[in-house]
Length: 261
Image (spheres, rainbow, N blue to C red):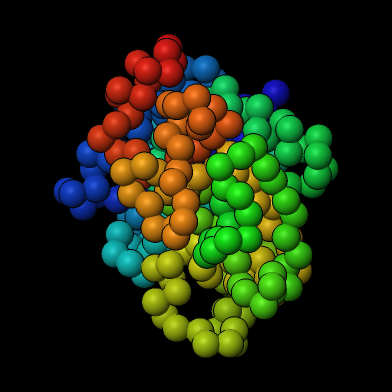
């Protein structure tokens, strides 16, 4: 079963303004997934932790800061390290705390992608998307790690990215040897834009991105994609959507509308 292969992480933070987001996740979709046997943890930075990471109730505590320099570490590096160092799970999916995940659709999406592509090393919603795909239909495609139409694409951290052990090994190698410093145009701010830096690591590691419209990086309440009107996950038009970013404040209503119990 997918829940025995894929762990889920929520990018969390202890700063007061962010706590309601991940608490809303735990009170709704994340709590429901936990009840159904999924491993779902809120990723939090703890610079005084005496080990690299530690499970603490619903939290995955990481030995890093809670400011912007720690975002990549708690969202990408330590989850990758955990994935490699345990034997049960083959993948981890890390998403944002203002994102809603539909358990049954998520499970079906991952199953279908496994059947279609075999290896799922790096999966998510490609950004910046422009007009490359029709985002309003059930669609996926495998993108070569070289530039796509001369444009660098990465998987949105908002809607989330799925990583395999192969991807995790590449992340650990690059981070621990600080290879990313030699990437063209490197800037320390990349550690805050975790999805951007992850995309660069995947590209330089020759790992393809599988884009799936089931992961929507925008929503009707917050859309930055020109000439696109994203369907809500709760609508008939959005029935193919498994994960949708920017649904904070909506999650309790979504659980009722979608009749998730």
